[in-house]
Image 1: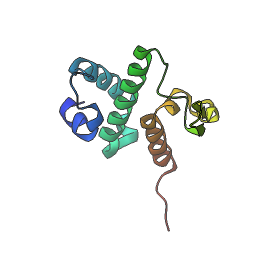
Image 2: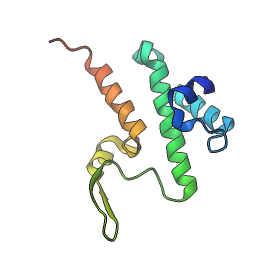
Image 3: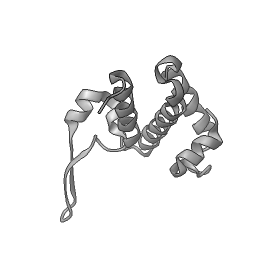
Image 4: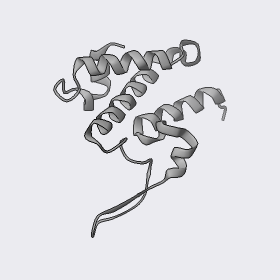
Length: 120
């Protein structure tokens, strides 16, 4: 994965202070190993970028001591006395990939690719 193209596509990872080149390279290397060339075809770069963003988000949350970036999609929230509930059924169905928006986007694309094209 090319770090520069990743940082352009996902500008939230542009800071080399917060996300060092080493961290982005490691996430990209792992992402490339997880994304199959034949399955993804022309969309492989998008899939690798989503995987790398997911990995970086999970690692940053783990380093901060809070686990992953949330517990799945928010199912309810409150403002007074601050309360947030997460839809853990999404995690049960999709595992750790459901814990970040990047993982969920990756899964949506994967499902579309497996389903094949659709006709109207």
